[in-house]
Image 1 (spheres, protein in one colour):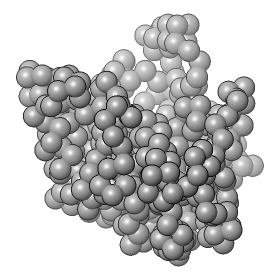
Image 2 (cartoon, helix red, strand yellow):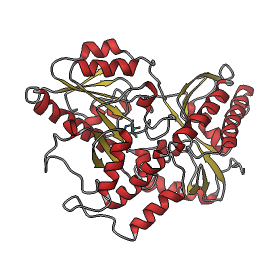
Image 3 (cartoon, helix red, strand yellow):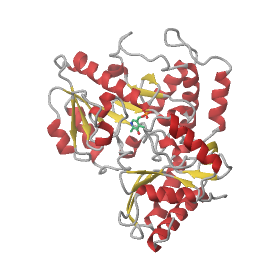
Length: 415
Ligand SMILES: *Cc1c(COP(=O)(O)O)cnc(C)c1O
């Protein structure tokens, strides 16, 4: 394993400067310029290698340049890539049939980005509320959880409580109620006759890999069933193997009415998202009421189908379960030694660094210098979510780098 050195080279700096000058400043990337990737590792423009412990927020669950997924994409590239849904294409049917089966549902609404899947789920829930549940026109409400992250559109930031995501983007879309995450009683008291859905992340990703109490989601499921309310699980980041199960909901035996999927569904190659449910709910949509020029395109469907086939064997889920156990066992050794708490499931860890020691960003910068890419969230939390194809030895190596960084910080040595 080659680890990176700390200096930013001229090649890197030039690439960073050009990007900073001409790309909008809606991110603050670590100063690394990635040029290629293979499995769990990426290589920068100067040939230095880094273990990718973010995996594009779990969009690269199956590794960079996954040969099976690349083959599926290449094969489709030479045939046809885009038809629009004005016509049928020969890839969409197999994709939606198999994705539905993977989720135990009979219908799929194909979209592109995660935010579009969320928006689509909201529209479906509202239409279901008016047409099936009988809610009076324009009165529908949807319950969400505090600390949520569901994407960046104006409607979605309307029910975010992150001021950075919201400020100066109003006026906001009405019809949402926020309750504390993990508190089923608060949710119960927010439900009324106009509630059409509860929209929830089974594990909150951007909030810092927050795992709710084990009885929470089953209680939410029960409340939704009893009150004739749809349970919409946003599994865009938690789903498709990350937690050691196909869906994070599986970990607690909960079946939502709608799954929202994205990120890894596109195999790290193209944006592919979907709303997955049964026809008694998804079937409310009628021709012309919703759509997407790119949604369900043959290239996306070919890659999405290859992703579903990877997950059908259960091998990826098993890897995440085994390697996740190893990761969490290793990380737990560091609690009390610069780390305050570790949470997560499968190959997904939220790590609270002692705020007196460093910010999450500082830790990530030092990890980068050692050849490990990770991302901070909310102050002193960092998250690790490597591709599920990571080698077991690289899991140990990642924790060793974190341990070394914590030792440096505790010794007060300069970066
Ligand atoms: C990333 C994410 C989204 C938004 O997906 P985009 O593809 O970035 O629009 C929505 N929900 C969750 C839980 C996510 O992690």
